Image (cartoon, rainbow, N blue to C red; front, side, top):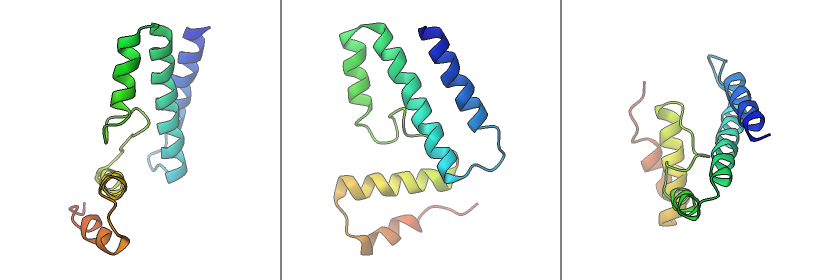
Amino acid sequence: MLSRTLAACLRKGNDLSKSSVLAEQTKTRYAATNGEFHALIVEAAHNHAVSAARRLNDRIPLVAPGTVVFDAESLMKEHTHLSKESLNMSADRLHLIAHAAPRA
């Protein structure tokens, strides 16, 4: 059962990533699928240390399995989002961070 569920997650992720241009909704669905895949592995391990490590990783910006960055712009958006949450920055300062990323 686990191997079938993991394989289904992999297929879903592969299907979502086939497009050369990924819509924001597709990126969100891919990140959710990636998070589900990792959660299944951790659950199947039945190991408290692995579970604790996963919980810790989930709190580290840009490390959690549900955080997937596809390009520099997405990376900057995610970083901006996390910075806003972490630093409780006001919206009037976020434009400074958002425009700091080099344009491709």
